[in-house]
Length: 291
Ligand SMILES: Nc1ncnc2c1ncn2[C@@H]1O[C@H](COP(=O)(O)OP(=O)(O)O)[C@@H](O)[C@H]1O
Ligand SMILES: [Mg+2]
Image (cartoon, rainbow, N blue to C red; front, side, top):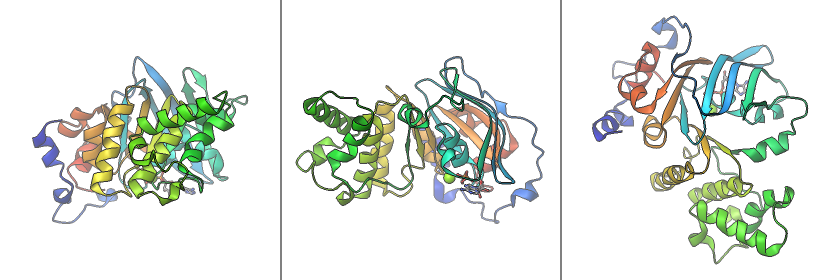
């Protein structure tokens, strides 16, 4: 993404001075997803996904592939269903009583909603990082060791030590905490806590990492560190990131999916979405007409 485009996306100038149009007043008819929702090398395939909270439908007929080793950004106005869709990918919606998911979600070709699927094992393969850093009330070491212990990933203390160090190193945190591994994780700064949560997620060696606005509670320096980290992690993981920052989507992702009122409007290469969107709704959103 070149600098001119980045500047144009500068958040403060985004909003239309004459006041936002309401979504209703846009009055644009929705047809079907435009762009390239499918990939040749899909890690996850979602097909005709509908999600309901009791009687309210939050996601309408979304079909989207997540490519292996890509960073895909999910963007769109608040309430459009980004978090809801993200949570379908590791069955986090199972934890919400009134939530019902229809359609197919395949991880390496296997339906993750099949009866035999153990959701705990699924979440080890498809890990999640939340908006607000949520370390356990345990030491830094125990936060990272938690998953490997539950899943029996190491044979002895030395192996566990090694895995904890490797995970903290990959999360860009080891140097800052190596002398206080047994201090509480909750004593770290917000940005460090978020990197601790990323270390905890990667310690179980997931294949996919879901991130729901992982930097929105952080200051700009901590945000830059998380973005840098995402760029490094994509070598080894597939990453799906929800962000309300278009600049962040432009900086970290290769593909971008634009959601609007529960529908997937457009998917394409991030550069194309931000410079030359095909759908009028995408265009209006990225030029700050609403959102
Ligand atoms: N736990 C929940 N219970 C009931 N409705 C929910 C719940 N979570 C989200 N919703 C509804 O689903 C829609 C999509 O929300 P969400 O996925 O959080 O959007 P986004 O992440 O894009 O802001 C909204 O109308 C929201 O009110
Ligand atoms: Mg959300």
